[in-house]
Image (cartoon, rainbow, N blue to C red):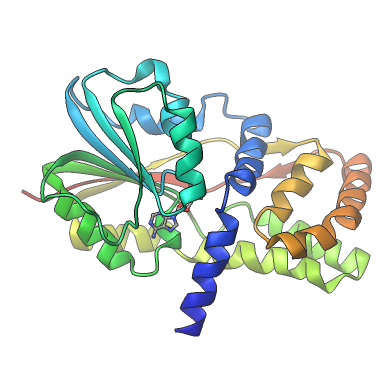
Length: 275
Ligand SMILES: C[S@@+](CC[C@H](N)C(=O)[O-])C[C@H]1O[C@@H](n2cnc3c(N)ncnc32)[C@H](O)[C@@H]1O
């Protein structure tokens, strides 16, 4: 129970605002060899008629909708939700001019909606944070109409392992044990909801589970962007203490060894609610 409370506190701090998430998104945007934007790619898979109801859970500050704003049919009614009030406040500000989008603070484990009222539910890189995932998946299934679709993005076990290796290398080079925590966080995060786990767990609640793999790698040339990324998963106090030495070390490391290639293993699961 104490462990669960500590995890909830860490998540609340991590997602108090979009700052940490944006550092991670920025690295992908700037350095991915895949020029096709992630949020556009996600929405490409959501094939619905001009009139439809959609729910996003763990939607953060609403980038999926902001970045697709010119492509969203006027007949879609969208609820963008997140557990973090800070994220939802930011989404509300960004999406204020969209009459067909409303925002809500809510927990994916207890959805305050009637059975069968959505055509699609989107859970983009969030299910690995949910303590009772079976309950959340049951809720998503419940609020979907028969044949309605769940779209759930996650990372596999070996996602961006180069980042973990780099943190360990920095730890050895600088003799700062705190840097090991970055590597531990990456390892822990990648094991929470792997592709195998997602296939098995979604298969218990949904039909026709399929995985769309995202192509591309990152070729990173900017030490500051990489430092921001590495520190984004840590509590602010820990990140603050490591910032200066890590930034300097990474600057020298990239200057001497050249760009760092990082391999994401990310995918979007699509699954249908059984009839
Ligand atoms: C990695 S971020 C992804 C945000 C957004 N989907 C995106 O891709 O930009 C994970 C989000 O899940 C939210 N979250 C964590 N646990 C949640 C829960 N139980 N219910 C709803 N949202 C949750 C966090 O507050 C955070 O905004």
